[in-house]
Image (cartoon, rainbow, N blue to C red):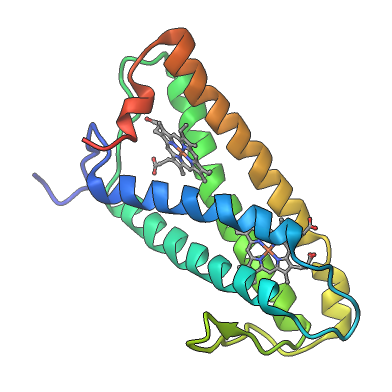
Length: 180
Ligand code: HEM
Ligand code: HEM
């Protein structure tokens, strides 16, 4: 092995654990986000919002760790796939990383500009990215929602193509992300 990074043919255990942990947390995060009470001007966040933010911070930490892992442990696309599928799946995967990162960061900025003090799982007070600012709320308002929907759309497309591989092409793409 040289000093340059060699692409592995398969995802390792770490990559699989990162993948499925983030899937599980997003499956909780969306319902919490939609079900928690709407925010009104000068309102202090309640327990559901604190939970949403705490889970969101865990997702942010995981996606950063996962991205670093991915950059240092490259995995080649399935070589038996046509070139256009190798390229489009790679593009979708990078887009998923970017959208998860952007969704969590805009959420954190939104909470920061509100001037909230949030307890991270009742362990500690969450540090904020910026001070309270009404004009900044106006700017960031809408970004978190737009990104959360963009992420959902790309996730649905991602899952749909995995299912097409599983049930139409009947190849081993899904197997690549399963244990073992
Ligand atoms: C990828 C992770 C995340 C997802 C999928 C997500 C999803 C959502 C959803 C579905 C809503 C409800 C908005 C609506 O009615 O459409 C919401 C609102 C909100 N989220 Fe997140 N969120 C994430 C991460 C975060 C993080 C990390 C924070 C803060 C640190 C945060 C802070 C907020 C706040 C303050 C709101 C209420 C403001 C608003 O309605 O725009 N979120 N989020
Ligand atoms: C819920 C949100 C999801 C997100 C954010 C997500 C994200 C990702 C990302 C970023 C990768 C690329 C991994 C890398 O190369 O570093 C990936 C690969 C993969 N995901 Fe997901 N995923 C999600 C849900 C799912 C679900 C539900 C399934 C199964 C039905 C699935 C099956 C796969 C498979 C099989 C691969 C490997 C594809 C290949 O071999 O190129 N994912 N996912």
